[in-house]
Amino acid sequence: AYGTLTVRSLLDTREHCLNEFNFPDPYSKVKQKENGIALKCFQSVIESLDSLGWEERQFALVKGLLAGNVFDWGAKAVSE
Image 1 (cartoon, rainbow, N blue to C red):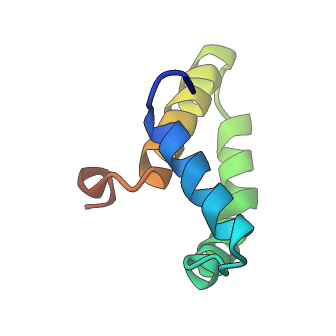
Image 2: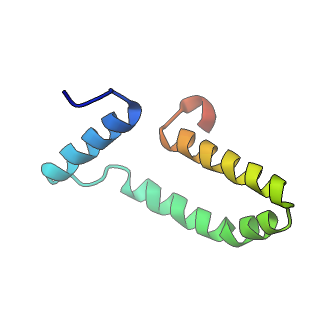
């Protein structure tokens, strides 16, 4: 009735339930800490990407996006 069951649909359902019943985000402090660390690294990452050729830059961007998504989904093997 609601389409294919995926990790994304489970995460969306979890988020919806937390919001509907006024639960605070249990990962809020961790997210704030990680965002602070990421912002400190941002400038050097951008400069590093700027130094790459076009094809290398595209590969690095895709690799980073995929790694970020896998890590965000909580894959223990990736975090280790």
